[in-house]
Structure formats: C-alpha cells, structure tokens
Length: 110
Image (cartoon, rainbow, N blue to C red):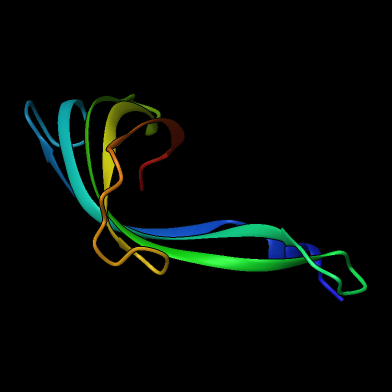
C-alpha cells in the first residue's frame, strides 16, 4: 500500500549569502547547492493502481534579493534567481535547461 508521505517532494540545501550593504539588511547575492527528491507516479497493475519512482537530483542555485530587518527583529526577505541541474538519478549528465525560482520569507532574527 502506498502512503501519502511516499508521494511528497522534499529538498535540502546549503547556501552562502553575501550582503552588499550591511549584514542582514539590504541587497544580497546568494549561491548554493541543493538535493531534491521528486516522486513520479506511473500506472501499475499493483492494487494501488500506480507505482512511485523517485528522482533524486543535485542542483546549483543563485539568487539576488533584498532583506529588511526591523528594530523589532522582524525580518522579511525576497529573492529571485534560478537553478541548474547538475545530475539526477534519471540522467547523470544533467542536460536540463535552467529553471527560474523565487521566494519570500518572514521570521525573527535572534
């Protein structure tokens, strides 16, 4: 039997952020690597009616963004950029075009 968590995507990454004005405020450039795990559902004669195949991929990422840190230590960050697949469990030689990505985050700085 297939569970819901088997169909979930996940990713983890490590990045380095360089602030161009002052630490934790203003413009920044971010570069890093990430590992992604994405499920693909394929039809199957199994009782569930499908099989799950996972693709594990290794990407490099680059972002340009802006971060606001207020006196209350509230921080809001927005960035846009892209990623490029280096290798995956389906294709170890990459070959996929770059993809656009963006994010908005909010939190408290301790």
